[in-house]
Amino acid sequence: MCEFKVTVSDGKKSSIVATDIIYAEQVEGKVILRDILGASSEVDSAIISYVNVNSQQLKLLSLPIIQTFTRFLQRYTKCVTEGKYNSEIEETWNQLKNEGNQLIHDLKKGSAF
Image 1 (cartoon, rainbow, N blue to C red):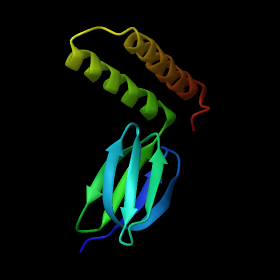
Image 2 (cartoon, rainbow, N blue to C red):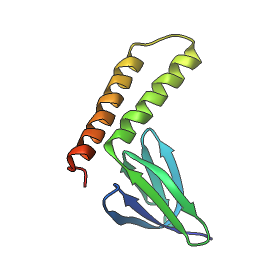
Image 3 (cartoon, helix red, strand yellow):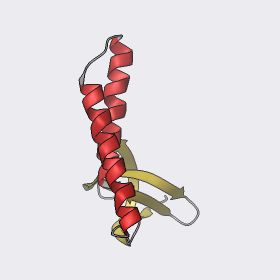
């Protein structure tokens, strides 16, 4: 059986968040992990960025904007599925743009480093 060591990175630093993981699922802007004993844990505002079965590595990227991006995709999909517009999608899109603009602003100022 293959158990993964899971690390999470925010772009600046990386740390181990779980070991002996046999299950990972992307759900609503977070990653749910389950170990060989069945214990679950969650990493909020994260996406799976890398999986290597040979080295038993699973890497996550965690940034606050990921939660907003996922919420936008969910609302978009709901609008398409239901075949009708909902103003929440525009509100979420504007929030996503604002968060992205803030990240870019922080990079320019050097405060993201």
